[in-house]
Image (cartoon, rainbow, N blue to C red; front, top):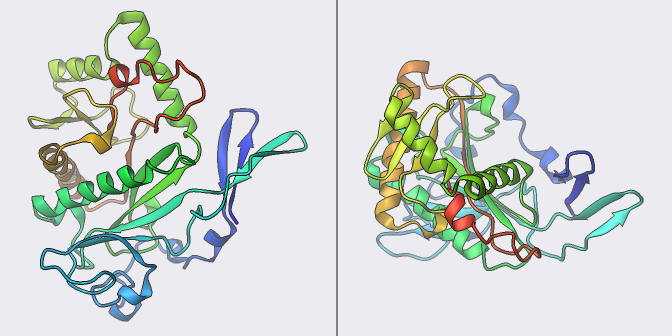
Length: 304
């Protein structure tokens, strides 16, 4: 059973998952080579090599766990967290721990092993984000969970171990420290200035323009003023929304367009680099502190 342990210095919860150590160690290679068809569990027709289906898009119908899909979601074969069980929070001497309860899912973006996200048609790319929305909505019903983290590792240097295009989702019983820092900053800014921090950032970036990478009716993609590393790009909705899972279909099409344009720019400028993509979303509203989320719908904005 995986577990979470709390770092008492910074207040960060860390996942300890021994089963993750038995993953295929393809990440030792500098570049992920195409998987031989017989070794790719994500190929159409190889459904028996993955855990049971949690969600799928089958335009022509058909039963679960069989061919005929455009996208499917399954549990990770080497999960960082387990759905079964109770949290059982407890002290271990001076320290705090709990069982590693949560979900770890894989969104297989396409049956085609080399059709990367930026090369999909717009409907296919939007389908990926629609599946994320569906899974977050479902996982939010589990009262043990506080947060759902969507992320994509592309390329060996970014931590990917399978070349077949996929995205991952981890649902946690805690809120990540990095997100807490953003929530605190957004709330402080809102209380002090009665304005939304993300709206003001977008206004400043659009006014200057030199860091804007792409813009459509729904989103602005820009390189942050204080970027942590070269080519870091942030995609922010132009309309206020704290919860990604409340996005309408049209919004997700615009998001897909913005993300694809950024990834295509990376591919041209950097020769198809490895990258990490992370969705920063509001946590589920489960805090025991009565005033914890009183302004979150006005002060925080989800972003990629």
